[in-house]
Length: 301
Image (cartoon, rainbow, N blue to C red; front, side, top):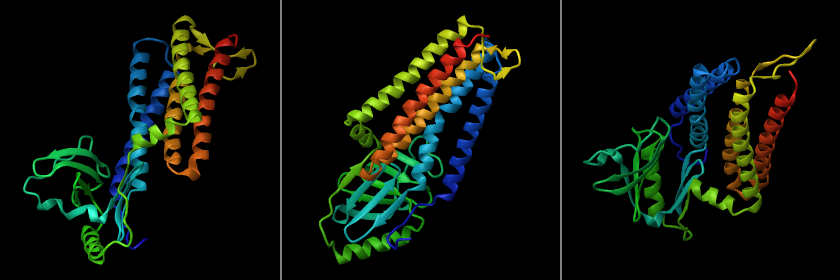
């Protein structure tokens, strides 16, 4: 490990987010299984709602898991770099006014909404510090990094060591004039959006998924049975058409995962080709789901 690297505590956060992710994936899987065996009715709608609720947090939890895994605080004679997923903040040491433990505050800090172990992320207002941005994982190890614009809350595994390293670096002085830089996930999205190929792939995947969902929603009430099961000796075995709902749900989930994965690759020039491949694969997957659903609907039962 780099001597100037002070990663946050990760084990507890990875465990909590990993268990939560597995639970939601399991509930989504059970929901899909139930949807595949039910006719359209009240039970079908209930399981459909459960499936949607279970699928929705999966990309959110997966991103938080990825962000915590690569989270780090790096300090040298020129700057303090905070990395957290697609979020990066490079602070010149000359811009840092002070670093101190959060326990020194007379008014305790309030954690941001949706905080979980391993993911204390977001901004809050504090009566003494004004705007505070959390980029931390452990409420018991929080350090305050004050700059002229805002105060950052970080949580290195060894707060004392980071504070001492900062003090030594400040005493030695900077070798070069570092530039302040802030990178947010939204910046990566807007940067990728400026690429015509990225826009085309994103919109293609979006329209294919929306079209698949709308088409399947129209087919289910008007077509009671479809050939979704493997061929038997007498032909294809028919099943309730409600099972077609699995196609758009699975397609949408894979597209979202591919979109987020592509953004993580697009941040660096070396990974942009892979990002385009991943986004293209998401659009192709959505098209294959659409063609599969078309084949199932048009196959005589």
